[in-house]
Amino acid sequence: MKLEKVTEIIHNYAPITLKEMDGVELMNRTDTKFLVPLQILLEILDEMNTIYRVLEVKGVRLSHYETLYYDTLDFHFYMRHQNGKKNRWKIRKRSYVDSDLSFLELKFKTNRGRTQKQRTSIPSIVDELNLEENAFIDRKTGLPFELFPQLKNTFTRITLVEPHLPERITIDLDLAFQWQENKQELPKVVIVEVKQESQNRKSPFVAALKKKLVRPESMSKYCLGVALLVPNIKRNSFKEKILKLKKFEPSITL
Image 1 (tube, one colour):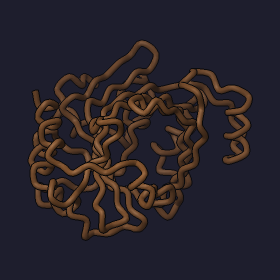
Image 2 (tube, one colour; image 1 turned 30 degrees about the vertical axis):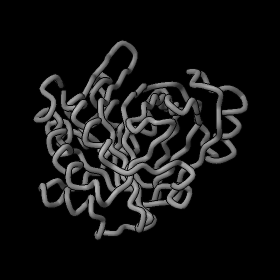
Image 3 (cartoon, one colour; image 1 turned 120 degrees about the vertical axis):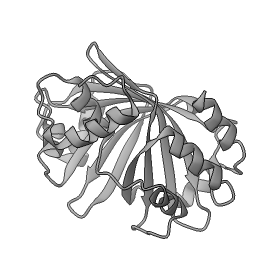
């Protein structure tokens, strides 16, 4: 029912096209993330429709995403995040379902807190990395590891743009994760990400979150899914977030 309410609210926003968004692609940026209860998101969205425009592609405003994350067998990328290491890679295939587009995407988080993203188009998501994909990863990262498909993730995304700021807001709902046969759905949890050229605390959306006492979180959907689903893996760094999530989503049993 609440997702229907999101759809209703978001249709009060003026649309923006992908072409119009070219100026806010932000492939080198700062990211600020927030864990938000769905009810609070509804309240904020209701207040923002005169400030932000919503991305619309082929008449669709709530876009469906499918992601497959890669890591080593011993979860090297996850463990670097868990152990607080800087200069972290994330490697994934992502399908933008409604646009019928898929990419192999490489994200690098620098020790200065910036996110650098590179990607190459692929026909679709296939579990194994082929020779061309491995070559792209080797060329861009120089990483010496053999990578394997690990975590699957699906969600629905709303993208908001403030026309006068180099800023995008992504709002991810209906989160679901799968590792092997283990699954976890988080229908009452929303991940909001504020993407900017440089951190600008004048963002209207950030101000609205602050007013609701929602504070920034350092987090990753990949690491969250691994921490929730992979047995006996070290997860000390994520325990506080998992406890917070359990307040929103009682189905979490960890």
